[in-house]
Image 1: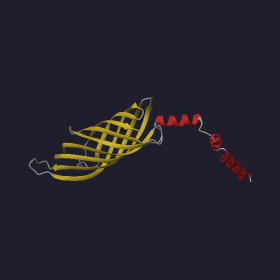
Image 2: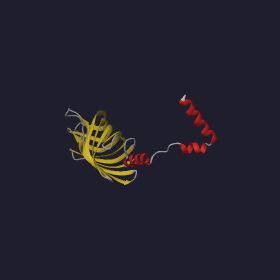
Image 3: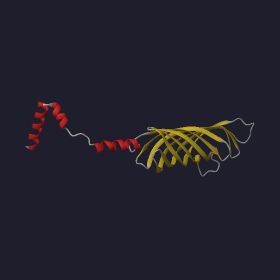
Image 4: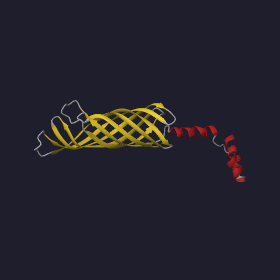
Length: 207
């Protein structure tokens, strides 16, 4: 009965003066608006981050792999971010296990986990780990320069661990510098072609 009477009163007010009825509705509080604004400024949960970088790996065989990656990540808190990404890296030559390897391409697909350790107004210090699957393709010579190279395609486990620092340039754009250890094909088999070594990354973050 009370609910029916309330509905009739609201309907009468709306029909009599729609403007007064609209003004009588509750509006968001100032504290609520400020809380939402602070969350957006902080890039808190719900924000998507697009991260692109260029990178160079110096392998333990004293040659370089150059490449880049793209990743989409989501902060789940002010401390933890999770993302998925893909990378393409290339080297013209890489000696391994007595083999002569040419035109090497590695394409890892990975899941990234980032832990923000120190957060300041414009900077963040973090640790990051990547794990995934790496597709490899290269031309191989079995230790004989005169031998005609043949193509090899294989898959392997990809891993990376490192740390870096991120600077906010403008409200939605940040740059980051990161270094760590990367392995394109982790394996217990000593004969696996596994370029690995110290990696340097330079990236841009858009949120």
